[in-house]
Image 1 (cartoon, one colour):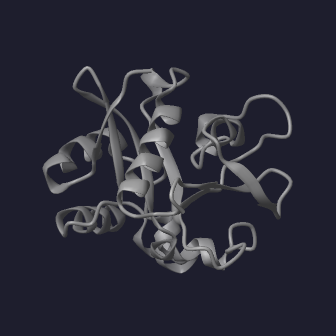
Image 2 (cartoon, rainbow, N blue to C red; image 1 turned 120 degrees about the horizontal axis):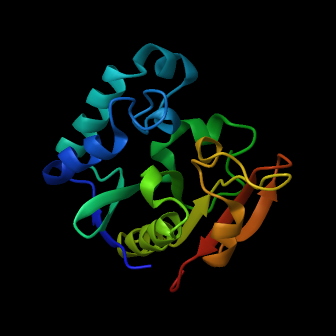
Image 3 (spheres, rainbow, N blue to C red; image 1 turned 90 degrees about the vertical axis):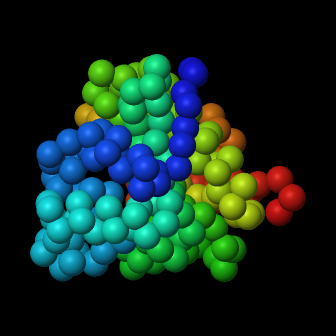
Length: 189
């Protein structure tokens, strides 16, 4: 699928905010869930999280990539060095498997009108390429592997295991029946 991707920068903040809409993508998250403790998330859900994400973007941090089709924003993928996502280290499911320095891909948001069209898979490929360009030697994802059939999109925000496998990721740990830890070692690592 043809998808143009760009880092989420201050110039593209309006596109990111439009994609996330008034609910901040998922229940006021604004893609801050993995950057916060549970207490912080509960206290900052909604407008405070929007402000926090906008501050990251306007300060020059690239918290993710935006995907465009025909000049319209249709998707988002959150990524960065694992250490910026403190919740991953605290989770019994996503805690580090080893000492390998990795970039983590933690969230996908796809406009409902473009779901099922390969947007998330294209964003995953772009995220891997972006991480490699930033010097990453390995990239991890923490997708969902449904027990049976399809799952509602709201439960697939970390991606699907099949999508990661198709992109060359391999399972390196499974601490939950439905949540593998998947890694792709990048060329030159």
